Each structure stands twice: as structure tokens, then as C-alpha cells.
Amino acid sequence: MSVGRFSTEPDERESKRVKVSATPLIRFSEEDKQGTLQPHDDALIVTLRIGGYDVKRVLVDQGSAVEVMYPDLYKGLNLKPEDLTPYGSPLVSFEGKIVTPKGMIRLPMQTDSNVIEVNFIVVDAYSPYTAIVARPWLHALGAVLSTLHQKVKYPSEGQVKEIIGNQGMARQFMVSAISQRLSSEPSTSAENGL
Image 1 (cartoon, helix red, strand yellow):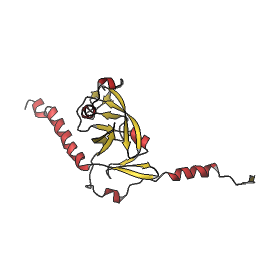
Image 2 (image 1 turned 120 degrees about the vertical axis):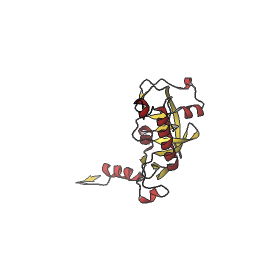
Image 3 (image 1 turned 180 degrees about the horizontal axis):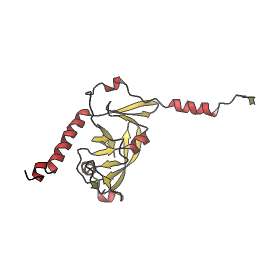
């Protein structure tokens, strides 16, 4: 019952505020940097449960719009061409080359008790990573990442859970990627006939 401007029933705005405040606040602090080598500009490399297996060497890339699976993971999961659905759009690799996908596969990714179905674009290209997880997975999980703190944080069961990156592996892969690029490109002096 309502009298003038006062009501005995909760205002719609109040009930919305209650729902919003029930979601835990995700933040990063100086304490989250403990265990990392600072300063750095390392990528965020994690281990994730994909298709029922713990998969190492997964790059978390909020700048990417699609999840990508590389040959090592494709073979490791014993996937076959008939497991893939067609995917016609080409992708651009880190080197700026056009890559034609072999297809797409939908697999479950588990973090704690959360399971999210993810569409992976399967490519046959060199990468030191087994997979790249991107904005679709981050958004579905409600996750926030910080490469500075080497963590992904996400809400789960009223708490903030975290996935910790492997900074040592990130540094190792950077060296591997540079070595691979240098060995696959002709040297400048060879091109100039020197």
C-alpha cells in the first residue's frame, strides 16, 4: 500500500542495487604482484582444463576476438577432421600472415566449478602456445585479467577466484618465438647480397 511518496514495497531501483552488490568486487592490488618479477611486459600464460584435460601453455589475450587452437592441442585431444565444423573466415597471425582455419570445434572449458562451452578455431600454424583464449571466454566467465599481476580473476559462488599465470613460461615462449622468427626469415645481409 502506498501513501503519497512512501511505499511499503521495495523500490525497483533498490532491488537492482541489491543484485549488483551481491556480485563480488574484482580488483587487483600491490599484494597481487607477489611472486612476479617486476617490472615486466610478459604475456599471461596459464593452464586451463579444456575438453576434460589440463592444458598448459594457453595464452590469455583480451585483444583477440576468437579462441584459437594450435596443432599440439588438436593432436593431444585426439581430434579428427570429422570433429570439426566448417569455418570460412581467414585469420591474421601474429606475423601478419593470413591463416586459413581447418575448422571450428566446441569444447567445454572448466575453471573451478564453472564450465563454459567455447568455440575454438583450429589452425595449422606454428605457435609456442597450445591455444589462445580471448574475449568470448573472458566475458562468458565474467573474468578480468591483469598481465601486470599475472592473474585472471572471476566471480564464482559469491567469491572471487583466480587463475595464476606462469611468468617463467611466458618469458621462455618469447625467446622461442623470436628464435623461430629469426630462423624462418632470410637475414637482411643475405637479401642485400652481403
